Length: 308
Ligand SMILES: NCc1[nH]cc(CCC(=O)O)c1CC(=O)O
Image (cartoon, rainbow, N blue to C red; front, top):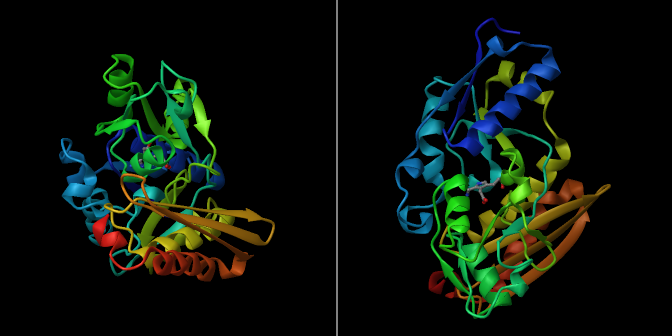
């Protein structure tokens, strides 16, 4: 082990800090190190500075990673901890997702003081979410529901829900668990009818490609099954060129050596949706994800993504 602390870059939100701490704790346990072997470096990103507009309007996923990736490339940090869901499919030259922690619950959670599930909400109910995927999936099941923009950190969103500004909200179960807020979950949306975002529930670690000393440390906390699932999901997203303006869901599951993949593309108002599935050997994860992406692309027809 090197004597310099391993510098862990992260955003400053409570969720991001919880993820960075979890990564540090796993590294400490795996290598028998103390806390002084690590330094958590908080980096403010453009995405953190913009709070009043949906992400889809201001440039999408890369907003939460740009400044952190610059710090990695400049050698100011050694690893960056991210939610896989927030990672663009293309990374800057010289950087890669070099480790995945074991994936948690992938499901979206329904939170409401007024109803047990999405389908129990009263006619014309208001749901807060600024995720285009969640908006489209809600509209597909319940076209009468009004979805209003709802950004801010988890605590802010829960407060708005308690104050009655909205009737319900949807959040990733994994994020709530990491913050010790799973008690706030009213019910969980099963993936059969509500497909999560690509990467949901998986913490990933980004580092410099040739930094072998760091890669060796990460190997001890890496989960290969999560990597295989994410390989398929990210290959799927890359084919569809998943911009933040396109509602897309995708999930890979592993049963032994068999990978199952399901993907969906929707119009934002839920009026049209295309789904496709494929399965095969885990070793073919990337090919399977890509094939579902291509299948959907063909079935959507030209213009669907542009219109969306
Ligand atoms: N876009 C924000 C974001 N990125 C990752 C998570 C949750 C944690 C995860 O999916 O790993 C969340 C919050 C949410 O969607 O509720």
